[in-house]
Image (cartoon, rainbow, N blue to C red; front, side):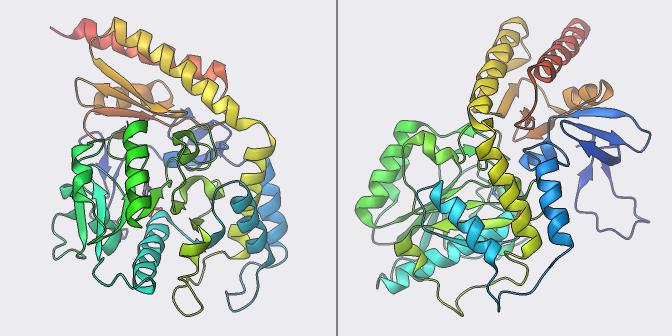
Length: 400
Ligand SMILES: *Cc1c(COP(=O)(O)O)cnc(C)c1O
């Protein structure tokens, strides 16, 4: 992406990211400031992480309290705040047990491990295959990269962890390839985020769920981007009317503090026993204070219904723009996870937005991804739409 700059060769930081050419030093609510004190409306939310905006007071005060008492003690001791956060997550989902870790990839690793162990425990020794989908994103570790159905992410890293088969997303015919002889689990996002903001079709998901239930195949939903209120419910699966066996969360769970979690139904959770899985930092007291305060705030402040309302409002405004500008081909998404399919590369639009004090993201091919904080106001949303309209007007006028 020519829009981003690579790390200078003189830097001691490894060159793993193309970075936008600004340096952010401060954030508050929907806004961030760069090192020249320029202010930006942040509609990236640190990639769906700062769902309550930057430095949310409720989370800050809980983390500050914890900073004064105990940072870390290891999982060799009971951590009461783990019990608390696990209880809140269980009470607000269809799951019974929670394993805490530090990132999305680690949550997916945990889900893959527990699914393997569950199949072994049930005596399904031939079931060794995981099904994931084209265009998915499940992480960058050895195994989660193999789970990710995108060649560009796997390139140069063969041999991959074996055992993953990729099927086309939203394709009813492809489901015939999932069977009780070999499939351990199916892993998918309900809205493919990194892949370009593609929502799963409800009928297809219901069909997949029924198949998994019938054949005792675990249904694992990767809610790392869609979870923690992003789509208008605490988890996206609620809107699909399904009950997965396992979900994974991370990004939004700690409001920017690294926290990941894998939630499972009791029957699956029982496959983890002392000695089968673990994580040094997973569920440490600081992370738990951030997670607890985040979930408490999202559930107590009536944020969720607002997310749906704002998402519908924004989508309808963007569809109006689509009528007016041929560069917009489609508007997709759920809640405040929105993708604008463009007829051209998203980078021009992203850089024009930044010049006007607005940060947005790319995704997949030619998709502008919009991830406002869940707490964004209608004034801010309006400013976003107006800015986009202004840029599109100028761009389309300048087209031959
Ligand atoms: C971001 C993301 C991951 C990976 O999370 P990390 O914390 O970067 O490891 C996995 N799955 C989905 C759907 C994601 O959006």
